Image: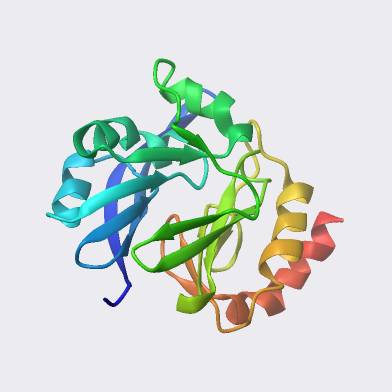
Length: 209
């Protein structure tokens, strides 16, 4: 069966450091006609369930624990039996949103998550958040970057638990080493490629050090 990637956009609010902002999030569904995983269960469990339809949802993988990326995860897990995966360095952020529900599994750098024929390699890419990860699928020539890398540059680092030099190191060492044709599927906004971002990322790298 053919592995495919589906994008669902959900809307809600991002809250941190006493501020709240309206945001649109990309929810990525990866799998085939029988089984899928969800990357970043944002805002609307009901909408995600409709997109999953009658397929088996095996895992909910969180690229990081900002509330707008994880706020629908417990409800989605409860309604499907899927396991929630998060890097342990983001547990402090997770508990701000879900103090009574821990993730089921901890992501580790280099591990591979299998989903209906897709093999997603976890790349720990701190900076936007301490436990931020990207998920690389070489067979699909795709990397899911959460809020680490966007079209036009790195994710924001102006709030608690973020650090600009660290995100620059993550992008330089973990993402710019991927093949230029690799598609970059982001946590918000439009997709891009590693090759398209590489030329102007050097300017960000120089600024970060």
